[in-house]
Image 1 (tube, helix red, strand yellow):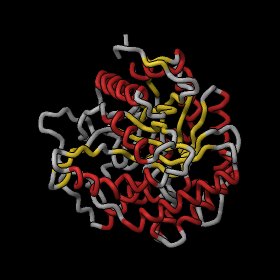
Image 2: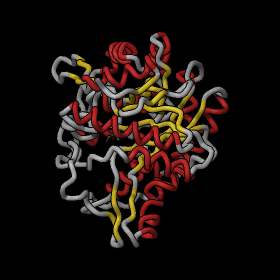
Image 3: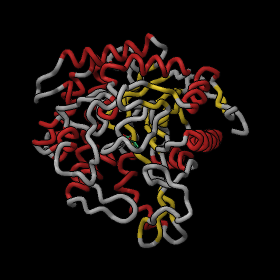
Length: 397
Ligand code: IFM
């Protein structure tokens, strides 16, 4: 980065993971059932043991703290905490509480996500988010999970990427009829239920843990209108993104998750430009997206502090990860210089992990050997982590 980027006082500097993608053996969840069902084309391999982080979380945290990070975002698994309706596992709650304490002992401030894509199988089987009482059931789980975050945790994320959850429900509704470009129509009932569940969860967190700041994290696609397509773009973006940003207006913070962009023409979303570099997920390599994403979030939820809760790239070439992240942080710095109130940055992901159907797309700062679970930090991890120690992002040497 040509000019150093000094991190403001208190700026969160970390990496993110999610339970199902790293823990392994999440057998009581709806995703586990999906992985073992008939969706071969979409789910190429099951998550299996993932990174075995359910047992190796100490090693993960030792590595992150040793690299210099000061913050760690991880999720807790509803399916483990409430394996049957209304039946809560004290052991699972104690496990996640140990993780919070373990992070604090290592100098990592934990950000706890309460829901990251997976639900208990019983919840999905009875109608999932679209069931009339889904919000109440989610709030009941949040209340039971309070011992995990009631002390020592500053930030709780209620639901990760609710917009993608509604879109995934839409995909299931459509019988997996995917458009050639852009994202399918979200399921309206799921969308409404998620906004409601978030509101109930924020109230529950505030009532049980008044010191905790509650928010949620929205996936940004950076919809860019081609000339003349401004109205089409706004209409396309609204149910896929803005509804969720608007729902964050009363929150303590808003999470922005950015990877790429989508250009929109008068007839709708367009594929990535032909000559564009693509990542292992097929997305356009477009690090500038992060700057656009935080600017749009700030304009849609004015006054709500923003935290970048995910940003990263799926690549087998760590040089491209370094280039991508350098570009993304330069765009973030510019947005902040222009007055966007950003309070932290979490890279996705700490570890190479299960990318919802396959281990192929590697997003990690740390490689994980699939047979031995041995962790090996990549050069990007050393560079990014060092900024946590020096409180300044510099051009990589
Ligand atoms: O791996 C996912 C994560 O679970 C949610 N946000 C996007 C990431 C990359 O696809």
